[in-house]
Length: 301
Image (cartoon, rainbow, N blue to C red):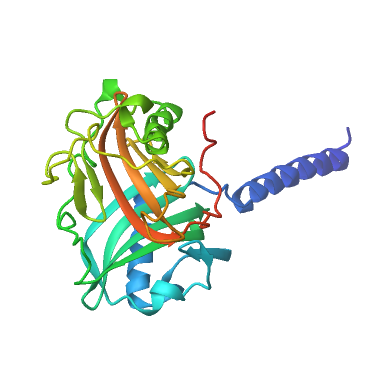
């Protein structure tokens, strides 16, 4: 090969290599998932933005979808227009696999407590969807939250390494609870409560240790039959052993008010094949209320 042709070939090879390197350094990086710290931080940003009534504080994806009590709203409407400050309670549920950051958090509107369930659907570390359930408790409400000045007992306990369940197994265990409500009997439903299990509803212990009523046994309580109960998987915190279900309790006559039902985001601490603690924020809504968000996981058949 002549010297000019050799120089041309060498120059072409160097140019090609440089182009490859330039393309490598300037190629868009693959989007990284939000880890637990990132998801928790987004929840903090969201709560602070609600209190400040300023959605512009949030890292939002394009065309963010926002619902409150299953109604589509513009971000900045609904609870955003009234909240004044943060309360003392917050319990997070972080689903790193499905990129969902969920929380039960107490806010305040003057003298009224706001029990907020919020789910952030995250994409590329930005908030792509916001799903919320809002329940207000006034000073005149019959049941006053008494358990929201401290963490829910056992909900944040580390899961014993030899007692961890797979994601699917956790969901199956949690779903025995709505099955017990469907037939009105947790024993026949095979709902596996651990001996220390207890249930908190809107900040009040309603079953188990600390209930303070005559009928506090999780298996012995008189359970209303809920034949039309609907359940959906909202999030699964695999590291912390918690399954968060969205549920509409369905038709039960007039137990929840004529034409109404209870709608809830209810969290179940699950490990070792048992349910160890339950925390729920309820809201009374029309019986026709649907979730209008997809289940995070298919419901086992």
